[in-house]
Amino acid sequence: MILNSIYALMATFSFGILFNIRGKKLIFACMGGGVGWLCLLLLQEKFKLSPTFSLFAASIMIGIYSEVMARVLKSPVTTFAVCAIIPMVPGNGMYYTMYESINGNVSKALSTGIQTLASAGAIAVGIVLVSSGTKIFNVKKATNNL
Image (cartoon, rainbow, N blue to C red; front, side, top):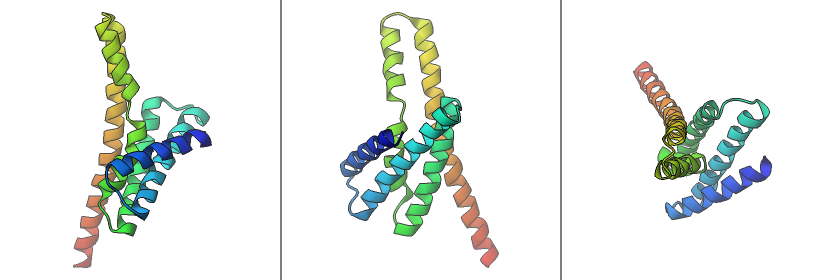
């Protein structure tokens, strides 16, 4: 599990370079990918949760991490969130959906496609949930200070 998290960290580091993230922001962005992947593996393998729920919970973890690091390093949240989400994108599901549909296996393609859409949706909803919660919290905090 630790070795897989290090691989995810290295993949996130590579995407951070592609996205032109510099300095210590790059280090913290790639750490988000490693932490997110470790969370995903812990939930799937140790706690035996479903892959979709594990992706949802890991994306919430990445969202929280991204929001905190954005405040600490005074940088946009997307700097950390996009890089950290990259290892969890269900690319193999997209590939196998197309592969099965080209081979004419409609039921397998449909099954894989629905699972892939559920995974991608879980990631998106987790990030949006944290982002919306943060915005609501900041608005309430600002109105209370008036």
